[in-house]
Image (cartoon, rainbow, N blue to C red; front, side):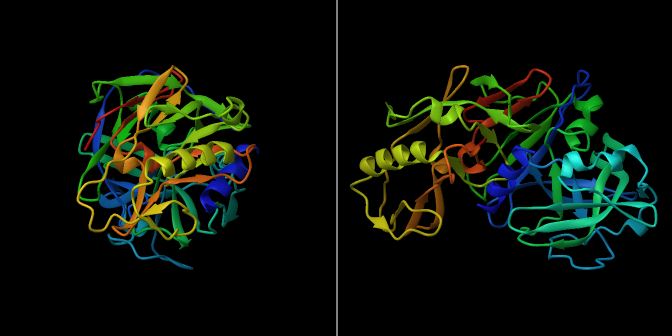
Length: 382
């Protein structure tokens, strides 16, 4: 919820890019983080290369990782924390460099300066923070996919609710993002598939020609609010068990919606959420309710139930395209006796909605930035 408030605060406060056609394609294995709330890939950083697990995030631009020495604080992560003093290709960026001066567009924070070295800060809605030196380094994705002089944050103060991964891979639309720093290699074109279970794997791909879903359909990529950092989409309707919900078309168009791999739940305008919850509860009336778990208010007890028949939830987007959510994309599982509908109302109808990562599970999601479109394909991974 805090992340949602943070995104909404940035929507109204901008930068887009163009690209050349891509020259190569790349596929990385994606898996869920320990909590299941984020999705991660492994990349290499430095010379010699050190492997790091980063959460890939379409709602953030700056790529950063924890760095030694942790002058203030570092949280626990799976791999050893990156030590720039052990890399021959690491270099700090000066305060006067254009990329430092323009860093605010990608972080939302004015950069600082320490002994002529650029200092970045990123703050998140739940008060999590990463702060450290803005630097360049060699980023290795595969032995043949290497980006030299990649600009990233080397964080020596990292505090908050980070989930065991070493940092973030920023995929939003901004010059500092991986998307634009790799534009000559991959043409600002990427896709992913988020697996339905922690025991399964998905993928994150860069470049064209890597699509796997046989049913790929596209919706326009929009700009929401005053910033082009985020990937906007236009929801035109929602159905439950094939029955369209009675939601005025202006409910979605008034606020807009962004697609975000880093937000767990989907946040809908209050009128849309109320209609969805009511229809879903009616369709699930034969199942035992479970106590709500804040902030989720529609929960069920499936313990001891061998078969559960769930009404299909369908989202419609401009195109037009219709997406029937996978069962894994409808629920947030606490445990078998507390399985909750994975949607939330936003605080006001005028605030931006967010289509979160649970609802994206099993779909191939394609970001064609030069083409200004986002594609969805069913059964991208399972």
